[in-house]
Length: 127
Image 1: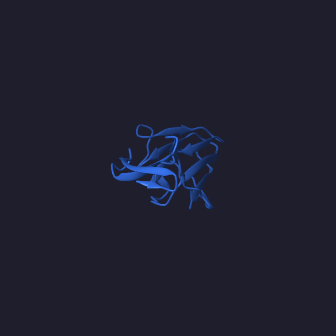
Image 2 (image 1 turned 180 degrees about the vertical axis):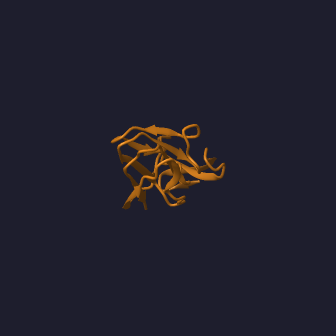
Image 3 (image 1 turned 90 degrees about the horizontal axis):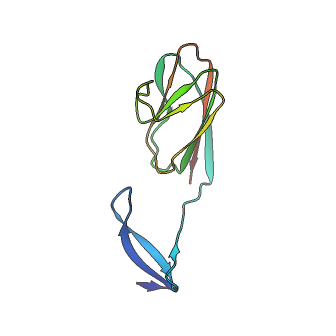
């Protein structure tokens, strides 16, 4: 389909397998359109010793998330439920920061070891 100087075709996305339009300019170059965030929410989640707890609930509208370990201990972050020292996605040292993949909109859990004090600062960006 030719629309306003752009040629549109359908191709599957790698995350859903559903067809989404791709658009090429008249020279054949791919046009890329991204979603922009206009809001952010920062939440301080109290660290819980020897426990897995939710830092961020699932949100289909999430465009990105950032986690800052504002505690005195190493934290185990899991993209999914029930983080532990043997089931985690990332290890976050005290006073360290991590960017969550923008493709992930599910639950994010944290495991804190004994003796932990402080908070996990979670920023979620949305449209």
